[in-house]
Length: 282
Ligand code: GUN
Image (spheres, rainbow, N blue to C red):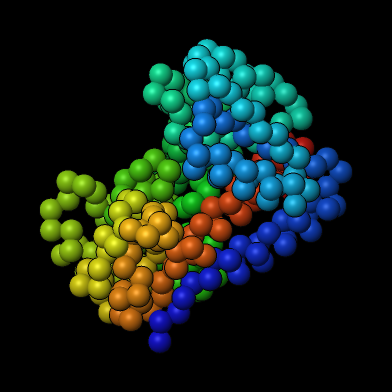
């Protein structure tokens, strides 16, 4: 029997614990989100983050900067937040407008306030199997789901489709650190299907509707769908052909209601973690 992994339920449980913990904190955690430009999807994500933070008792500020903002003014704003004792966590919503160098922006954030775990200091910690200040939101959310459903990646063959800095690369490293055998596939991979068929755990993070079909998965595999796409009718869907694949696997995440709620929940958890580190609370 296939189990549908319930990201809403798991995130709700984690969020309740976060809210309880915040209740007893003298200084409330504080998250600053910078958004540059008018990208509609980014605006929706940023509003969701602010709403969730407020519900939990996290102070959140959204800094909206104009599409034509210079890289220098953005870097200055980050510097200001780095130096602001009241700001525990900084998030710059991506993508940024083309005239701004994303790497320079990420590297400007103080690693101690890097709530996304995008800074090379924190990424390097993961790459060397050491602890970053906090772990990246979507990969950590996926690991929380696996843990909740008692799926231990140790010794398992994990295949990841996608090599983005936000999901594919960091989840590969984090699963390697948990002793999984990890393969990363991408747009230049030959015989994708042959590789995905060997996976005990298959993670799809490419942004292509119904890329993963039932012939690509092994019977009894665990399938994690990170995709957030729109189908031909404008309905939200993932990278996996859910209705067909679910008949063949042991566990699968739906879209919506799988990985999505875990990302925002981990962002809140990370904000709390950074605040505790900065205020020396164990
Ligand atoms: N854009 C899409 N996903 C993310 C994310 O996790 N963090 C940031 N900062 N921007 C994003």
